[in-house]
Each structure stands twice: as structure tokens, then as C-alpha cells.
Image (cartoon, rainbow, N blue to C red; front, top):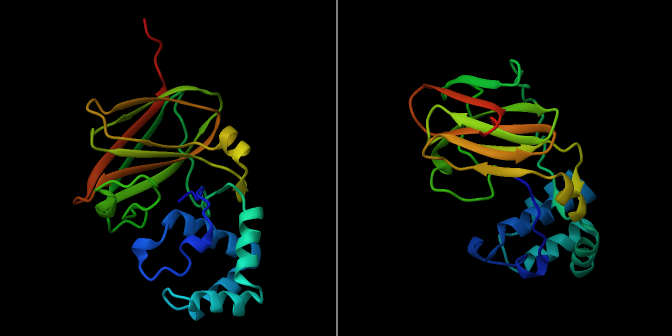
Length: 225
């Protein structure tokens, strides 16, 4: 999941209940701790800190040998605007086009290692994410333009995320480079979207079901008239 929500950790760090914690803010802070101070020390903190309360501050001071308020100030001053998801586009195959059209044909089957679930990459909550199954691929657009995404079933969800070869982005860089769009199910099964050139991660998602075929076609939007 992309992490672009910075919040002062003092607002939630000692919360006793998960309902009082900003998930997005905490994720941004944890990513900074891992990237800036290393995963080994964060693992130590995770094992040492209690589940809420002032003891969390004691654990932070012990692990990082720094006053927690100083650590939080440093985070607020130096952390980037947006963290790019870990291994965002790694290990995914590029879908090759035939002419100017890309066709994804697959069988969604939970016994297949390529079919995953539930779907936890989307920042926009929806009622089907917890029971979703999905597969992913990469697609390369050499030129910007309007592209048409067609599905065989209208209830198919498609998440499009532009691949970024950086760990983090400033706000200006994010405005220029970042694309993270959810194509909601449409009655006709067709969605047109304008995209800049680049490589994109495409997640195709369905509500859980027995093994079944799934088809998606991507092509430049036909000229009207």
C-alpha cells in the first residue's frame, strides 16, 4: 500500500486501542523507522514495546538511544511525502501486446500460486476486499493517451499503479509521477482513463469464487466520430 499520510506520532503512539490509531499515519512512521534506522532495530522495538501506553515511549528510547520527542521531531522534519510500496512491481510478468492491444486471459484458482487474496493494496476500503481473489501483471505504455480497459464481467475491479523506481517521493515528485487509480466496476464493463507513458502494475480483482476464467483487454481508446 502507498504511504502518503504523515501525522505527528505523538497523536497516537501511546494509544491503548487500535481504534485510536491512524493506520495511514502509523504506516508512514514505521516505514521511516525501517528505512532510516534499519529493520533490525525496528524488529527489536516491535518485540520490546507493549501494546499501547507510556511503555511504548520507554521502548523507543531504549532501542534508538534517543529521546522520543527528538525522534518524532526528526521524523516530521525529514520524512518524505510518499513512500513507494515495497517491491511494488517486482516479480510480475510484463503482458506483451498484440499490435496496440493487450489481452489478459487467466484462470482464477486459489490452488494456483499466482492467484492471491485478500486484497490489501487499495487505500480505498470496499466491502469485497476481504474476500477478494486477484492476479497481477505489468503493462508498458510507450506514449501517453486515453486507454480503454474492458472486462468480461462488469463486477471486475482493476487497480492501476504506475511503477516508480524510487523508495520515496517528494510532494512535487508525486504530483508529477505517481498514478494510483481504482477502476470501479461499471455497468458496461468498460472504463476509459488518461495515463502518462510508463510501466504500470495492474491488479485484476474478483469476489472469491470457484475456479473461473477472467479476461481483460487494454487498448487505446477508439477515436469518436
